[in-house]
Image 1: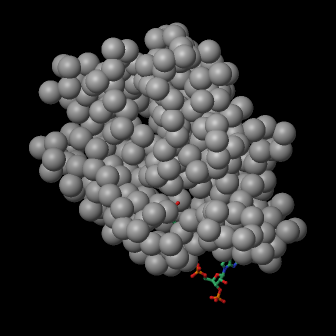
Image 2: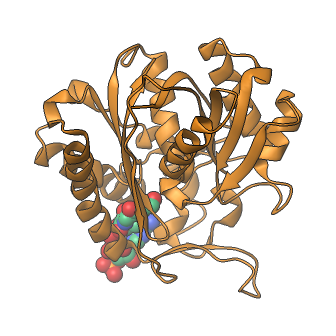
Length: 315
Ligand code: UT7
């Protein structure tokens, strides 16, 4: 045995709200189309705020909730693909802004929308080998800067946000048994980069990605339960990546998950990529829907294509 538990969650969204009505003024779309096809009604976009501002605020809240001081953090991982700089990493800026110790291991990790799960697994492995037993896992994304405003099928989807978890490793805790995978594909979903002459932009082939997501989600749930020797009834709460309300609804129907065991905030925030799972966790914790002892199934999927799931407990 040995693993991590969540001790505190935090989140941050920039104040600027973009409503569906605002988008109607920019592209040929409608509130009716966006809400019925995606479930999104608003999303937050950074104006003056930076990516590192969002990481700092989410992390401060998580540390406060956990009652852990910055100097107790041994590893800091930021799951992101939209940091302020290609270098320094977002995690290095968190080290600066929160005053983490100089010997804190800080780095970014790109698992796209599954990034928080990749980061939680990496954190579990790293804390096992670290003298410090607390880690900071942040999922943060400023995708508004990479929106292609000529592509109505993607420009309505994304919002900016950060979510953070303070986790504790202990040899007596159960592992989160993360299941992670990828199928490399550069045409389906992503953000262009140095291999392209034009500035970075989001691209997505919506329907195939939707089909991938609705297959990946139940597959991930089944595999994680099998690995843990658990059943669906052993899970207190289900947290899905918030990409499309219809993807979540299909999973919920398939497993007969009751309303009190899952939560959607896509309506307010849109798709915030790596931030979406910790954003949900932080709100759940804030609303008292999860607490000490809660066992939560996390399921993510996205660009890469990547997928991931894990069973995480709250301390
Ligand atoms: O976070 C990582 C994982 N991401 C996902 O899992 C996203 C998966 N994909 C999806 O959620 C959906 O495919 C979308 C929400 C992106 C698109 O919904 P869809 O139901 O698959 O729409 P579509 O792309 O098949 O387009 C249907 C119609 C098209 O018009 P025609 O050709 O039927 O006349 C589009 O041009 O809807 C049109 N359309 C729009 N109309 C109004 C596409 N975007 C818009 C829009 N407003 N914003």
